[in-house]
Amino acid sequence: MHIVESLLRFAIAQLDRSRDIEVQTFDQTVPAGAAARVLYRRLGFIDARPAGANPAGIATVIMRLPALER
Image (cartoon, rainbow, N blue to C red; front, top):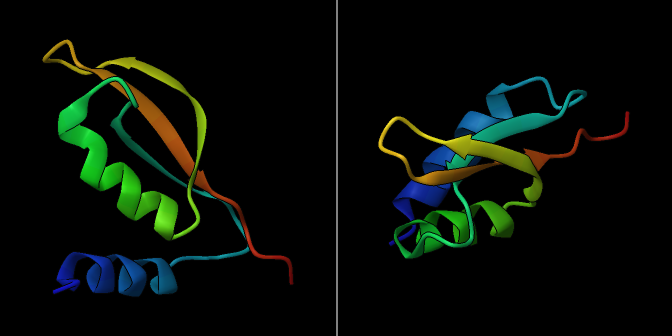
């Protein structure tokens, strides 16, 4: 059921967690992006900053997963 979440967790585990990880996704005003935003939040991402419109003119945001302290 949670294949996408499992894949994303695996991908994150391959990255350097001493650094923030950022993704760009639809912002909260775009209903089509709600599922992705829920997934990113479940994994610990937070809204970091607006990212403007994508080429299709849809509002986006940068979400950040803060680095782990070592």
